[in-house]
Length: 317
Image 1 (cartoon, rainbow, N blue to C red):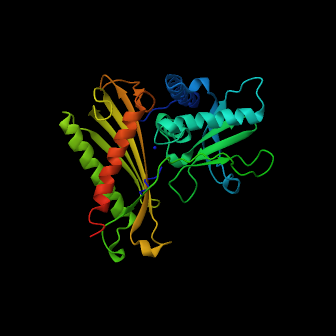
Image 2: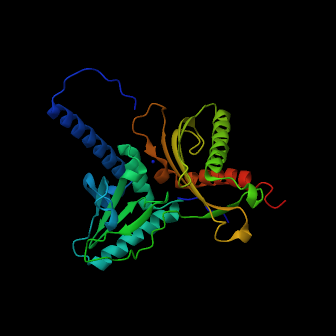
Image 3: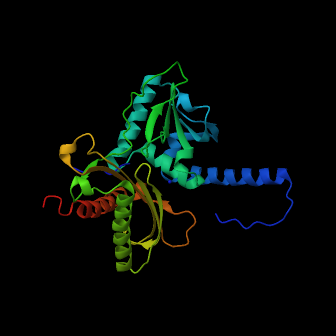
């Protein structure tokens, strides 16, 4: 069993611009991004379940840190049936989450968060999705000291309450036992480069076999074991016939400290998001996670197999 856990160049000129003009430009840009996000929700069928309430700056979700940092919040309200009771709405919400997870490798909470971060070009740690469901608000965000998304219930409604609905951000977990004795165990930085080299080599080789050369950019966080890969300029790896844009997120931590007998054991999570279009210059590609869910699952499994083969090679020698 393995665990793979679950994303400017400025030219400066001497120019006097009225402050109101800067505000208009900022507001127009934000409005355009909101329209793009709303269009995505509509294209994947989420606009019938959620409506955008607002996108604004707000406090960090955890009460003890609320006054230390403002982050960007997306508030979505679950569209209620007029005659339904609160408990019925909660059950309908849970049913929607389970239906999504039954078809995908991740969760709906993770998917919405990812799309929000990508559309608004936000650092993952500076974003939060608030799902307003009847009498509760569930916040999806990255906690301090971790690279894994969590879902927690807002603490300001009726006192502190625990989150009772189970929404695992990572739908499947894996464990990789890496070759080598514990004394030679790779640190997070070295492992990050092993993971990056493994996935990059596979993507480039697979892309060239299809006659394309992908452009791959990486985001690394050595503090918490996180690698994000943005892949462009590739065709037919997931959907077979379309141009594709991929976002791959891999998270990992060493689990050997709690169980030394296991040796060099790392837990991993991996999530994959894919957009597709018939042209490499398409400005609004479709979301393959919803149109080709099984193909996305299959390709994610291929990525996981590549990592498993690399990291576990010779583990039982």
